[in-house]
Image 1 (cartoon, one colour):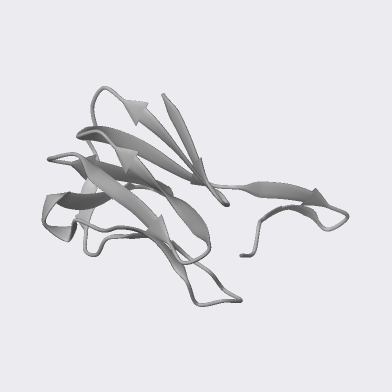
Image 2: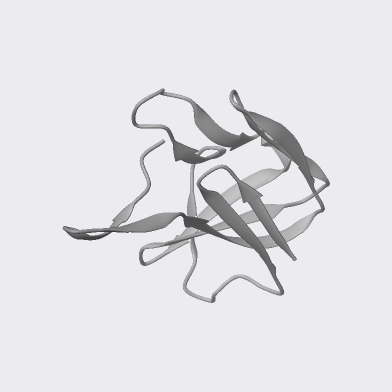
Length: 98
């Protein structure tokens, strides 16, 4: 199952990587231009993890992905891998700036 929320892509996965380390907060991404963030409303059900440069999300109960400029997206409880959209430019492949 895939979810797209602006420049953030979220994929349901079976389990977290064994090397995943907890990370504080509930924001999946911050807008460099607007200062807005893609975040989980229900902080009490949210745990973020990193494994190298990869970001993962664990939700202990159904939750809601929110952002000031996008519609909300309900997410079932479970584990997710999170990506930031990238684009090709003459400089190379870069992360999309929101």
